[in-house]
Image (cartoon, rainbow, N blue to C red; front, side):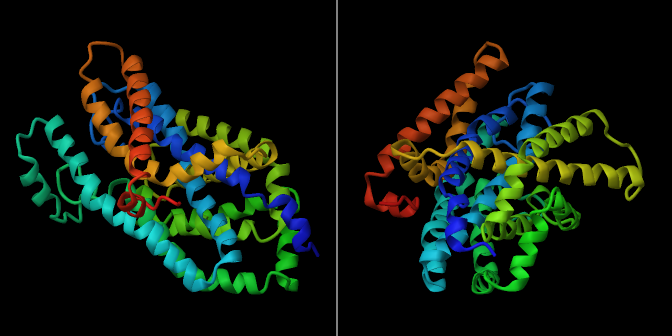
Length: 373
């Protein structure tokens, strides 16, 4: 049976921190792509009058692994947090560092963003009128595009807070029985070649539940719990590392096949089911590929990682408002969409870090944005 000393050689936090930082920094390039995609299901709070197939494909590929990666890392981070905190302290931290900043963002940062949406659509309304109307709940339309209430990008933080609370008893039980014979046999089984790919079955079942579309809480709760479980034994990480190149190649190949082949068949037909399974396989394979390669090749910590890790959460909260503001002005330029895109990404990244640098020096904003001392 693998002991804790052996595990410490594999379960490093550095690669998880770098992957989290990379995923958060990718948010601005991702959302900037959606400005140039006409599909109404690709939610962005300002849009250019174009429809770029290339930008749509790139955004679609990022979407396959982006949120699963963030939820997985959040679950993995819970494993490390519970190693040094009591259950009470863990929950208190989640409320203080997640829930309070999420509520603040929804009340203060999201309404100006959706107001920009109204202006870009040619709706002449004062900010006060929009702000008062923002708190009208339209259960059929939670994107906020029509000016009513939306959690916007904060849905991730809200779900993460909820997941942390309901998964806590299970996490504590798992930690209590880490040395049990069952845990050992489970890790031994999943260390076998390609055994981890069997996880596609529960993941696909969770994804098949029709709940909140691409924000399916059942699916993401499964990914969150999986992140925790994968940290409980070094053998899980060994399996992920060993098959990482294959996972990444298969994930990319499946994505390409799905782009080229879109079945126009009745619901629950064999082709329709196969297409859905391929999508979930794509997401899981890309997740494992990125985690494995990240763990194998990212080993360096230091001042840059310390700074970016501290900035990642407030960056997440701030980025969408600033990207929307940048998009509102830059799409008016008489130039190519590629130039507009680059300008939006540069402006939004620099401005978001700039606002963070200001806020981290003000105690009340450090608290409201969950900025660690």
